[in-house]
Image (cartoon, rainbow, N blue to C red):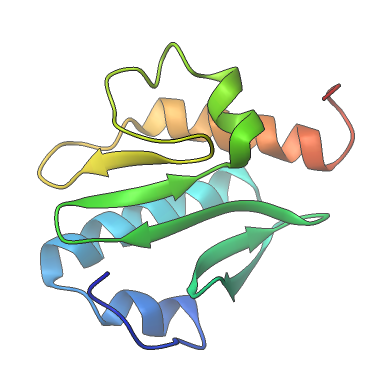
Length: 122
């Protein structure tokens, strides 16, 4: 991670990255905000986090990608659509230099909102 220091806000975290990465992180942040209007921003595990009845999603910047962490359930629910991307049990990597899959990210965030507000069965 380019920003190794412990940022105290998402603005501070994003400011520590090169311009291309900052642009993608800001786009991801704005997309999450509009998809989860009741969520609040925080820093958790040294990365940006959105909170709504508990942790909703996390994201972070790296040299060649941005990471998006919608927890294991968010990845599992969209695993077929996420196949083109590298990732893990609770994470997915979106390569820098490629457009973010905004519709997919929006739907994942909305799914997590429903989970955290008890409107979907886990």
